[in-house]
Length: 388
Ligand code: RM4
Ligand code: MN
Image (cartoon, rainbow, N blue to C red):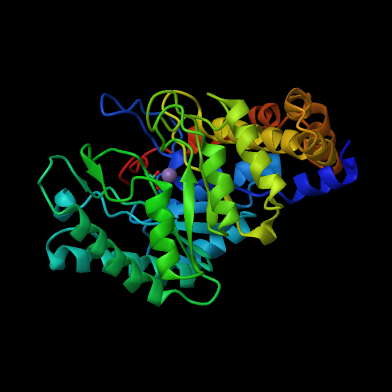
C-alpha cells in the first residue's frame, strides 16, 4: 500500500487551472442558451474562477484567452486576481476569429497574414510579462478543406518559421505550449493534427517548447495515456487541457465521459513523478458548460481530476512492478484496478477538512449564496460569451 501521508501531500500540491471562458455563455453552432449572472468582463470571470478555488483549494490560477479577455491594463487584472485569491495563468492566443484567417494564420500562404498572426502571439507574450504568466498556449485552426488547396509541406515550413519568431521572444521561465487537434475547423488536413507533429516542432524550437494534450482532440479509441507516456519520456509534456468527449471536441466536464481514461492518464503522470508543480506539467481544464450552471460544473470538474489523481496515487507501484516483472498479466492488471476501484471520496473529504474547507465543495458553493448574488448584481452590460 502506498504511504497515505505522501498521497495526501501530493493531493494537497495538485493544482488545476480553470479557463476564463468556462464562465461565459456558450453553446453549439445551433444555439447558445444564455444563463443569468454570467460575467460581463474579464474581471468578473476572475471573480467566478476565484470561487472555484475558494471551495476546492485546488484551483489557484485562471487561464485567459486573448482577445476574449482583453483589458486596458493587464497588471491591474493580475492585481484583481491576486486580491481575489488566485493568479492569472496560461495566456491562450486566438488566431481563428479574424476574417483574415479564413485560410489559416501562421501557415497562411500570404506573408502579411502570417505577420499579423505572429504579431498577435507576440502581444500575448507582452501580456504574460504584465501578468506574470509563465505559459503561452497555442492552438491553431490552420488547415485545408480540399486536396490541392495548399502545399502541405510548405505550410509546415511557414508554421516552423512563425513559431521560431515567437519562441525567440520568450523570456527566461516562459514556455510555448503547442496544442494539437485531429480535425475541425479544417476537415481535409489540419496543420497541427497530432502529438507527433507538435513534438517535432517543439523539439526544433528548443527546451522552452512543450506539447499540450487536450483530451478532446483525438480520434475515438485513441490511447491517450500512451501519448502521455511518450511525451513524458521525451520531457515534452507541457500540460493538459482536460475535458470529456463522447463524439468530437465536446468540451464536457473532465471525468464525465470516461473517468477510467482520466485515471489511466494520471497513472502515467504519477508513474513519471510528474504530478507535482515542480515537474512543469500544467493541469488545465478547457471546457464549456452549455446546459449546466457553470461555477458548480467547474468545481465538479476539479473534484473529478482530484479523484482520478488520488486513485492514480493509490496504485501500489512496487506491487505493480513485481507483477510486471514476474510476467503476471492478471496480477498486474489487478493492482491497477484495485486502485481505480477504491472510493477516494472519504480521503479527499478528510483532506479538505484538514485544509479548513467544506468536505463537499459543490454543496458548500450552493449554500454560499454567490450564485444568487451574481444573478442579482449582474444586470445590464454584455454577458461574456464565445467570442467575447
Ligand atoms: C480550442 C482549443 C484551445 C482553446 C480554444 C477555446 O479548441 O482547445 O485550447 O483555447 O478552443
Ligand atoms: Mn484546448
